[in-house]
Length: 347
Image 1 (cartoon, rainbow, N blue to C red):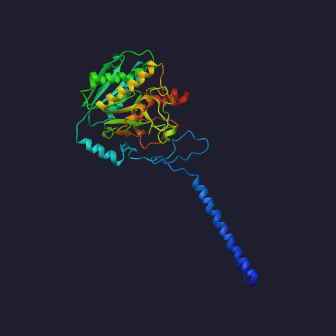
Image 2: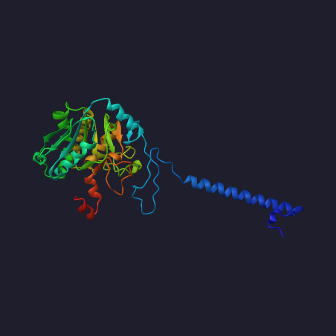
Image 3: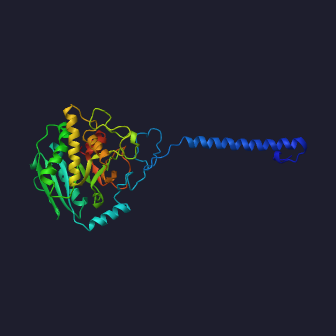
């Protein structure tokens, strides 16, 4: 008995029918395989040109901390997208190392936020532009909180700029950008070439060097990095001056760190102030508060240098993985903690 009946020798009509049957089976198998492949391929969407698609399992739709994201070196409009240890950053550090620039690091300290000042400055002394001349501008409502004076290294100085006490956080949202614009115009404008504005409840954890210097610098929000444009939390209220249309926007930026040349930061502070004051006069406030107005401005005035989430990160299930955590937001990290962790970290 033959093991393979189709290989058995046959003659006449029987032989023809068996050959035809075999050919029909092969042809049908090829058609089914081809159609299945086309169907599977047709269900795949083209990946975003700057981000690798995130592969999430069921129950992890809201998390992307384990998602492997690409680290592009440029934005779609050609500005550098800065990762601290890549080749471009090393080149930029080498370029600026030949120059001596004056840089300001400005922060606003009101009420209980004074408890963060010494940790912030101490960490900046180690990691923030250690080879450059840096002036810390502390806008504070209670200068006595800085006694005794903080010891600084060579080429560093701290200047206290008194501001009025704020009765509540909601008032601070309306006033921070106008305060920044006023400080640059009347006190800081002629003292430094670059100014960076940072929230005080942060800590430098790794080097932040000359790679961050640019004409207008913005930092990517770690919880929204890699998301499609339609998922970014821009202001949706059409009556707000921070409103962003569906076809607008590239990235979502954090308000925890931004900066650049002094004149450009002044223009940005002025521009955001006008948007905020317009909404205030109409009894409105954007859903993302100051961050919404910052993002509105940066859509029409694209930054010339974009910092990766390495430069503003916190421990959150939504935050993207980064090679190095350079500036960590303790305030937003506390917001992401449960009650036990809040107590442990003294939030």
